[in-house]
Image (cartoon, rainbow, N blue to C red; front, side, top):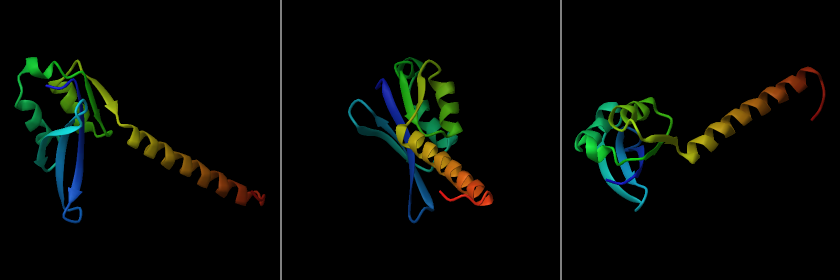
Length: 114
């Protein structure tokens, strides 16, 4: 069992179907994949291992989905749950854009030009 894994899902068939994947971050290999996504689907990955095997997982990377956090807390309670950098930057850019829009709107109200 790898010490570092990444969990993600992606859509296919024009966004109507999903596949959940688990990647070994030490070798960059996909070590598990299953159609669908969510807590029930991801639990299938963890249930195939013993508690001793799961205890060797030290880091779990994924997006901010609550079901990933729930599964990590249930099956790998000693693992560190990490949010992947892609989503952190994406969320920061959305919030920065919201601030920019709000400031631009406020400036228009004061009739100042920027």
